[in-house]
Length: 171
Length: 171
Image 1 (cartoon, chains in turn blue, red):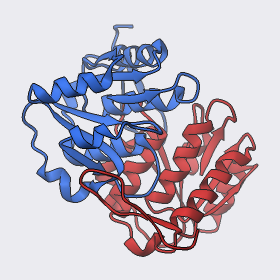
Image 2 (cartoon, rainbow over the protein chains, first blue to last red):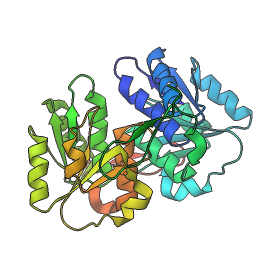
Image 3 (cartoon, rainbow over the protein chains, first blue to last red):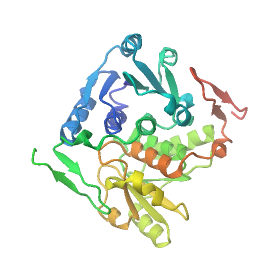
Image 4 (tube, chains in turn brown, orange):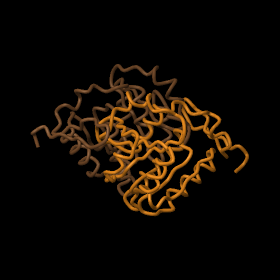
């Protein structure tokens, strides 16, 4: 869940955030803050072209959503530079059940620190919610199932020195 | 080195990219593309407040700079979704000497694939240069020296459920 999106200022950061969530293993992305179709369109279009079954949507009342998610037994992981070290904590976070990873914008409601099951910092230096999400998911989930994106229209083949992208005849 | 910066479109991504480079262990950041003082000011101001000795500057001719860097024995690591898997390759990249990690924008010159010593992909899915840089540096360099940022004006103390930022009396 991306909190506090601002249409103008966060356009590309929010778009990158969703693509990062997708690439590093999220099943669903919820946008909140200012309503904006653009990032949702980007995420859907990348998902269609490069594969996978990403869900995405806009959530107008994120804190209400999180309270209810928590009440239903979901676990909340809040990524914040003020939290506890991810290297130590990640391995203690179980994989079972539903988990929401929440990343804020500039200001997050103080309540979030309280309702989160884990406040996790990817370093206590200011950097980027995109960086934090990527490193946290990579550490916590490890290598994603390579078959996850096998239904895409195109596939990038790793190459030592050039670009190799193959169309899978579905375009 | 950040290639192909565009003042309007990339404002926040470039700013996040530099902060990510700093937080994950870079000593210096070079901006190229459109000339822009804003990200440099952000990087310097964060560095002053949160510590460390980050160098940053603008490089008008990045390809010339890279060619000359390479000729002088520096190693170039190009992060690209078309490259080879970082999990396998990172451990083969030596730490010795000078290393430039290059991240592009939308379009990078084809020449870069050729002059780079390593074309490395943090996954072959489209996501974000910020995510790629963070995960690559974290994997390759591992945990940064905690004393690296000890000369800052403020310090964040990890906390389970709130914000704890202490001023070190130098503000």
